[in-house]
Image (cartoon, rainbow, N blue to C red; front, side, top):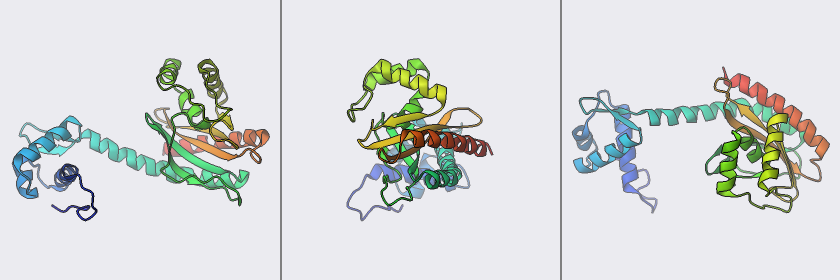
Length: 258
């Protein structure tokens, strides 16, 4: 078994062994059991047994009546999600470039989970003065208009539960920290189809964001977020950007449906 990090100065051996087990199951021409994996990987049987039980619990492996292993649904689902993310980014990028060129502002594509917002694609403003955000950046749960868009398309009980659990942060003096005011803003976002922010997340920065839906499930899969300095990204320019971004999001959604 090879260890890709053996000279890195940092090691988590059980993680590498678990990955080796998954690799061995994936490439095997015939289904393998604990003894087979122990022999082929040169790992003792008790360790292999413990690893496979954990992977079974996580749904990353499944086991038939003969106690042989195959890749499980959780691992396959993760792979599909990864491929879907690549497809979403490649489909969205031309529309993001068009928005960036038309409005001379930075355009971000974001996903959202229980830990916050992740930037999965970006197109920097073509102007000399620009907002720079790296792909892969994690942003706070309630960051700007993007968070409003993600939350707006949950049911109201879900919105209230999240807000009460996490509390609305005061990023700037313009941040909405009153629960009822924030919920009213979410209703407005859902009705008009886009969200706005006026220096609510970062002082001196305005933004608009729009939802991107999966055309089959109608679930929100991402948010397009256009951000710019408040000195140049005026309310009227934001309104026009929102209209253009909503049209871009509709086209992206149609293309995601294949």
